[in-house]
Image (tube, rainbow, N blue to C red):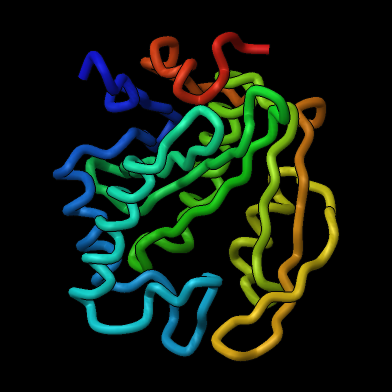
Length: 213
């Protein structure tokens, strides 16, 4: 789309493609959410959107993307990308920012269908969006956070070289839980071979990043 060039944005890695999702991609993301994202009894998300019936999870997934599209502005945006592995939509990797033109800082979040856990996909898709942030948008910092009992997410964060950035206490389903915060500087990031960005140039003004830094 000429007036919404984000639909042409892609990041490719040796095994994955991350892209701004089409309606068909959203339908397939809904399928992944319906199949399940985490073990029963766990809740890795502050908003417990994975509770409920499979159809509810599918609907919430699609509605979330529609909301992020509708709320997008240069001053405040969230960009959840569909993750493609071996031709299948397997999850989503998001980066978001407020006042990016000034702060040059992004945050990240993600989920991956349960059937695709344990293959290193989570690490590779986070590395892909960090490549987009640092090499594409010229970000200076990337932040991430996870509950102290979300061991898979914490392992990815530590593997990619983030440093500790404090602790927050959140209300998770009526109980106080610790969120561990992390920060990664562009100076500590090394571009990986085989990672490429496609279709970014016309999107830069939408991110508040009229030029890379």
